[in-house]
Length: 250
View 1 (cartoon, rainbow, N blue to C red):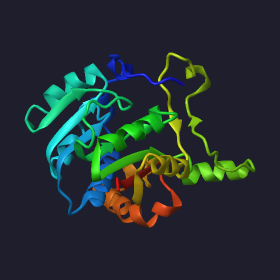
View 2 (cartoon, rainbow, N blue to C red):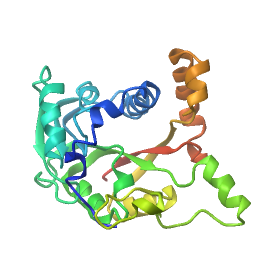
View 3 (cartoon, rainbow, N blue to C red):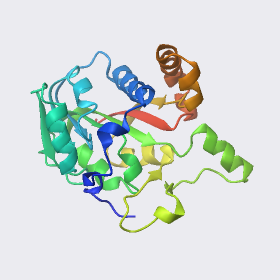
View 4 (cartoon, helix red, strand yellow):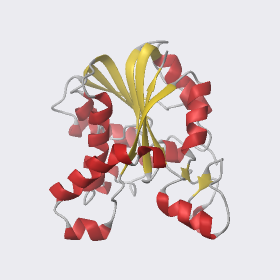
């Protein structure tokens, strides 16, 4: 499974429109980031693989400068419009395994909804560690292989959750020219991050109540309140489909 930087350049992948109808998921992720960064302020933050800048506007609450670091030229074109009223957000084309920042240049790095495209993230983690200053912070989201439904599925098959990433693409889409889609064992990811010099300090379980039915029967306010209440409570069970990790570089 190869790494590709141009997947989201294709017109079929309208990532801005992807978020239509996903208000719960977007709000759940923003709530997690706010909780992990609460009370902190940074000089220079970068959102790695941030698409059109969905979360960069949020990061302005916590940093004097924000850089959208995105490999897709099409997403950066969309960002030019989406972020037009946010002059403190810089847009730069780069890939996560070759970050165009000097050593120790950043105080905060976020990487959300990117890990599912990276089967083997050691190079990316090394790059994040390199560009963070000592004492710097990272927030990394993990597409969670060990979520509650998967644990039940593997249990019924008499199997343990795999240590290595699992390709979640349908068989007909498993071609070399397709971008990878994998879920990771969060225990493995935490070990990989440690080897890269990034210490895990907090975890949150995110999108715990992702359900079409719940979206229909609950108001957005109630649905989100229940999500926020569950994020820390369910963190160490890796319950939800996403795990958010707060990391420090010693």
